[in-house]
Image (cartoon, rainbow, N blue to C red; front, side):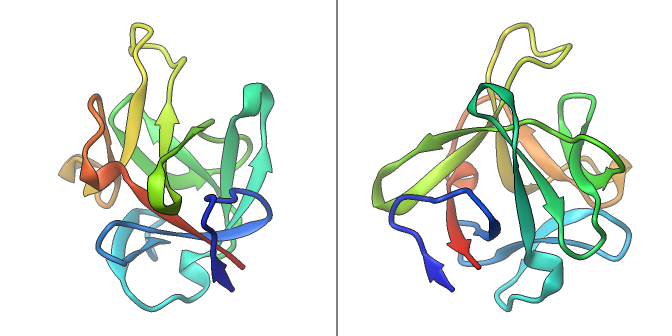
Length: 141
């Protein structure tokens, strides 16, 4: 396993937030950045989509990372999932962008390591403006 200096989003990966915690799938198919120790709940397979976008499939539950409305991300998709773009930043970091969905009105949004709405019982937030919680490091497995 190595942390890529170029945020290589191919094959099997783990994603870390700015605080060094892994993105993981919970036992209820929710998502969180809640552990500094990697296990199967932190591992994702990258599926290449159209227009240079990617989709993520959990290696824990074999489900796609998906989005509810335009604000919350979970891991419950049976087929197809959330298509995300990649913005490469300095120091090997990246943003995962979300665009082209109904209700976004042409805007690009950013996946965040912050918790989403409590209504979804374990989701990650999607933000209209990029901030430090939207910066990730990729670990290739």
